[in-house]
Picture 1 (cartoon, rainbow, N blue to C red):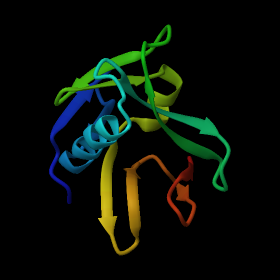
Picture 2 (cartoon, rainbow, N blue to C red; picture 1 turned 180 degrees about the horizontal axis):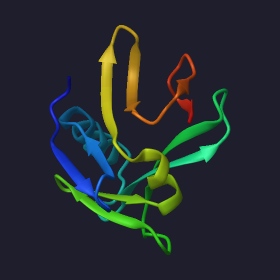
Picture 3 (cartoon, helix red, strand yellow; picture 1 turned 45 degrees about the horizontal axis):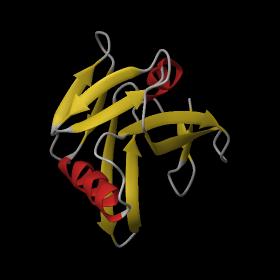
Picture 4 (cartoon, rainbow, N blue to C red; picture 1 turned 90 degrees about the vertical axis):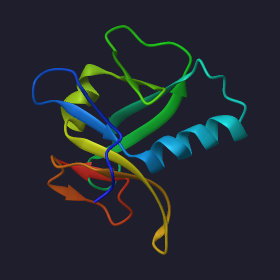
Length: 122
């Protein structure tokens, strides 16, 4: 299991966890793409994908109205309330192994996932 670097709670029982590998990769991406340090990581979900919902990762300059804002080891994270409902308990990790390179969402609420792991259903 990956080491947990931080856990942030919106309400009792709701949490998003980011591993050290994911934090390092977020910092690397921001640096390599000249993304300002003031930009935050946006975690979210949207309808679509082969399992019904897809994960969203992006960088945003400002929060949107209603966003829940976290600070995790120097990374500011924005999550909209609808997405937080589906992301509660999720661990964001980064893998650089034989099965490919990329962010990995370990979501305990996902009843099914697609083969590539980028979409899920509840």
